[in-house]
Length: 261
Image 1 (cartoon, rainbow, N blue to C red):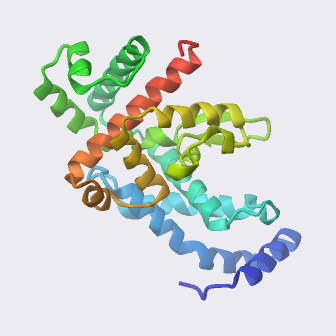
Image 2 (tube, rainbow, N blue to C red):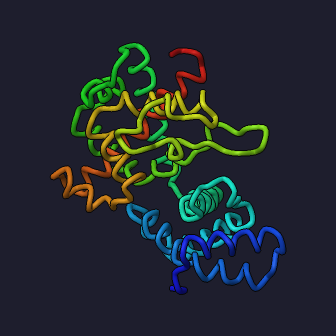
């Protein structure tokens, strides 16, 4: 990795680049932050099927880094690494969506489960249990568990779906709104306040373990294996909890959009 810059030197480098668009400075910035691409690609790769190559994810992520370098504003007092990770992740997910890597049958089953969750939680006014979801789908608990195993790992894209695009083309995803547990408060959110308020509220209403999985994965940057150790469950169980959390969030947000909640 390129030699680490001090915070002051980094800020000066960014200011110089924004003023001059000097290609040599751009090259220095790319070298400095290139390891971020592999870091993000490594996180995304967890749980992906074998046909998704790590090197391909890195290739997709590079375009996100380029985009981040061009659009980053050092005057906004946001660390570039924080900004770049979002852009890199977004570029990878955009490309994965475009190649439609999820088998059609799995995608359809995921939609059926999401719709069942949406209907149940709208009528119940609370999080639906696995047994209630299985019954809504006409399945027994064992078949529902098998179905969840199939769709687990595909729902990671859902957390990065865009839920709002402002006039300045600034996008807000569910992942953008996940904060540390003590900061999960709508009052702390200023930019895109209303949509983020809804997202944060939906996260707060998740069952405790599912909320913890989201926070540990997207905020604390733990892998599914590491989260399993924290929660004392298997990695596959963490993947299922993650999938259920995403489905509940999508269900809640869909209901909000339809004016049901």
